[in-house]
Amino acid sequence: KTARGLMVLNADMNQKRYSRATSVNRDNDTLNALLGLRARVMPKTTALVDYEYSDTNYKTNATPDTQDNRILMGLTWENSAQTTGKLRLGQGERSVDGGADINKFTWDLGVVWKPVALDTININGGARASDASGDYVSVENTNYSLSWTHDWLDRFNTTVSLGSSKDDYTVKPGVVGVVARNDDTKTYGVAANYQMRRWLTFNAAINVNDRSSNDSLFDSKRNVMSVGAQISL
Image (cartoon, rainbow, N blue to C red; front, side, top):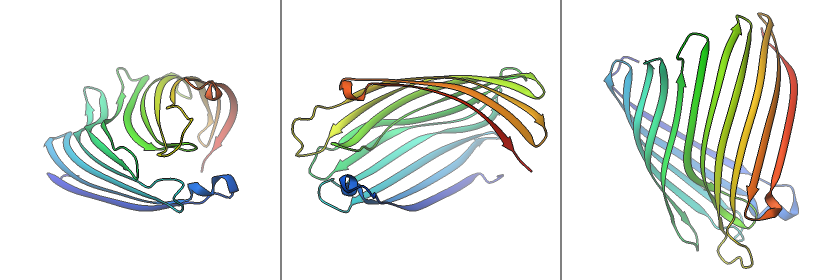
């Protein structure tokens, strides 16, 4: 952790297989890789440059292969002005076999802010292109979320959260009669946690997901109420 410079290398291979006959065209293999450089510019602040690569190959020609290249620059910081976080900004290019390339401004943000000892505020957001499903080959997603956690007692806290997401879908090359789809989703949530014992925590939550689309078939509203317990050793 005391090094002035660091190099980061991550790589993984994912395989996805579908059992439904109607979804067999979605079987694919994906290679993901990241090469990053880190340079400490202040005791608690680090500058970064990341190159991300993703290559998805589908088992049939019914779904076109895709390739993503992203270059991002940004900063990470720890416990500076009561905040810890990361901000990356850059450009992403998505190539689709037989289709138009997508060039999109790409970013991601994650900040934890503790204005006072009993409150924690989380701010998150991002924008990037990724694979879609059905008659769509790509989706460009932009999302924002905010949550506030307050410790009422040593063993009891509540969290209020809200979020907004926008999805723009690109139709597969060669598919006719399908319009480009645009979804807007709002999310709301309230949760409570009570630590009855060191090893036992009870929780309850209500979450609302409200999606509106230019294609009314995809309009939906989902309310989820849950109660649970977390047991740890």
